[in-house]
Amino acid sequence: MKYQTQKIAQAYFLVAMALFAIQVSGGLLAGWIYISPNTLSELLPFNIVRMLHTNSLVVWLLLGFMGAAYFLIPEESEQEIHSPFLAYLTLIIMVVGTLGVVVTYIFNLFEGNAILGQEGREFLEQPLWVKAGIVVAALIFLYNVSMTLLKGKKTAISSVLLIGLWGLALLFLFAFYNPANLALDKKYWWYVIHLWVEGVWELIMASILAFLMLKLTGVDREIVEKWLYVIVATALFSGILGTGHHYYWIGTPGYWQWIGSIFSTLEVVPFFGMMAFAFVMVWKGQRDHPNKAALLWALGCAVLAFFGAGVWGFMHTLHGVNYYSHGTQITAAHGHLAFFGAYVALNLAIFTYAFPILKNRDPYNQVLNMASFWLMAGGMTFMTFVLTFAGVVQTHLQRVMGENFMDVQDQIEIFYIMRFGSGIAVVLGALLFIYAVLAPRKEVIEPGHMQQRAAAE
Image (cartoon, rainbow, N blue to C red; front, side):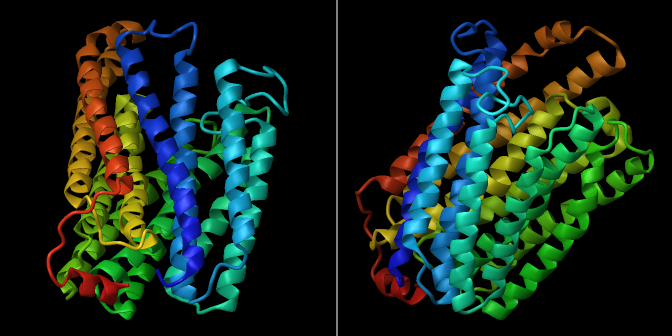
């Protein structure tokens, strides 16, 4: 570890992994409720379980991004973080807000209260005071990393990361605007939800992936940065107007059908670019980096993001298809693989790379770590296929044949049972990953890898 303030990242990663465990456990419980709907219906209703599942996903991913920024920005800028105190203060605010959200959701506190109670908008259910806390934390964080970069060296990786982080924070401000008109509400709601995951988050993903490729493959920075610029350009070009594929049916003018269809089909391009980028970097690279698990996660991230966000997104984005498939299990299939591939695997890749450096020891428990990758990736891939088949059957029976929603749910129960089985594999993989990263046991390292690691760092 070259810079002492990189240690800040470890605290963020630890909190993120704790929330990751909660998130996948909540997802498993939600999957079981699909099979046995009355499970915990009085104590913990499905809508609360789902809120905990999705909200913890967003928060732990954000904490992972912030920790990644604190890890890579000192190396990229060749400067210590401007203020470690502000970094830890940001984390405390985020943790307090998260605990406040959990308590509010579970006990349904302050129902109907505009400031203290949950808001009710999907993914943005957080009480107003928590949203305000997130903005304060984001401003402190952005001030801290921006000041670090302004004092130090500027690189394409750090600049793209900073643009993505600033965009993330600014777009979140639309979460405070909640108009009474439902069509208008949905329009601005997508400014947060879509422009995060299909806009600025892609910039964050590309910059972190570029950093990992730079460190793991030994390819020249100039080559990495050229690829990064191409990926960022295509992501923004397609992602911004691609928001229109959500506008088909909410009362916006008809031209959004064509704008949304055309530009959202182009959203597959940056994800294909990221996959090609990762494999070309490995092919061109000359470095036999000892951290094979981190390389596996980085390549897995690029591949699964391409299929989950790119291919599965493309499958039902055209308005003629989306008219029938929107809101079915096809959407759930796309959402699960896209989030896992693009952002979950990305965070787990940077965790895998960073922890041995932060703990000042060789890459360790790599066999267990790689086993966790195949458990999670395999489970999530199977889940995606299962939900896709469930969605096709659901679309035909419900949207084409006109059968009742609950009757259709009974007919696709077998898919939910299989989805629950795949969820068990994902949870086991997640727990195995956390153990592999945090467990103190070292593996036997081949001779010469210590020197390679020193050269890589």
